[in-house]
Length: 235
Image (cartoon, rainbow, N blue to C red; front, top):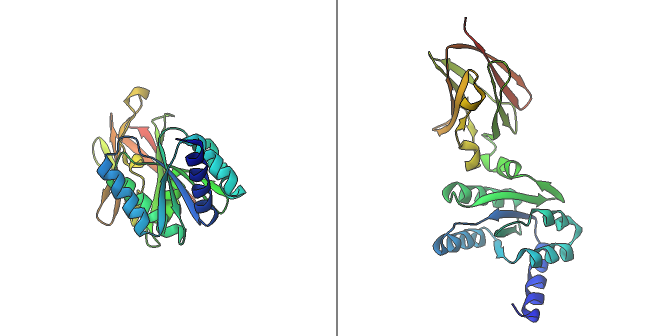
């Protein structure tokens, strides 16, 4: 790119950021040309703009725009698209999260809203809507028989069904907006009771199937937006 073209690119991106209400960073590695066109069109239809620029130029632009977006700088690693919203930031978050669900190669890296850097899970939280809780992460701790931890943006309603070598956690009215959080967790390496954790979006909510090496007692504890399932091997 010639020097004059570089300056124009920085000025255009800086101008967009100057009037933006939200800016989302997403890695587009692996998207086809058709999928990139679809991404640009969807963002444009949501009163936004999809900008793809070299990371060095993008860093200059966010520094030149305003202090609100300087914190995006450290996130510029790899092939990234800057998805800029000019009006309702929640509406833009919903569009981006929906696209990430439909295009698995599109990975949300973070965003800036009101000067605050948001991790991918918090970008997804508004997309769950007022009637749904957003599950922002599902993790595992290999202590005792094992613990499964479900994080969300608000306290969850839940129910549990036990089988011989599995436990099914029912989370009505809860959604998993980020596709990465729906990946199964293989925990056999730790050698405990819990062997595998399989989240699944179902009509009306989410189910988490926890596969066990042996029958076990399950104890649930909810503290705010953190739900913990602890397993004790049966005698």
